[in-house]
Image (cartoon, rainbow, N blue to C red):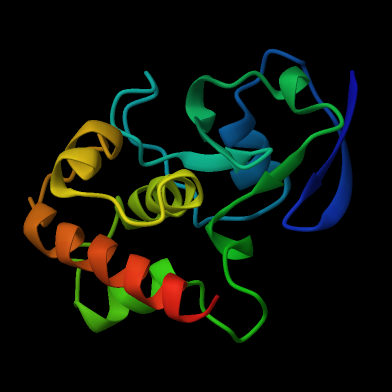
Length: 155
């Protein structure tokens, strides 16, 4: 089936089985490699993207549900050379260790900051439930608070 959607601001049409996880369309068809495969069960969050501004685990999101939607991957989070506040904070706080899961964490954080511009530690614990095998959670929490500061200063 043909599926049309906008990804990172650009229109795309792909021919695929509608039940194919959107993750594989993003990575293998569109060659956007920032979105990672982790568990394949929507548990770890490495594959987190935004669909209509909401965080979605793309490994379990059928491509047919993307029809007509606006999708953002880590590659589309920044505005050209201007980093998104989350990306800037991740760099300032030197968050990644191995880095594999970080695009998913950044996408989850960007979605959280859209609905809660000044999250508490409890808000972060309740909403950022991705998994990091390197356990960089302390640095991520600092970066999430820093991203909130950067975002509010840019308003």
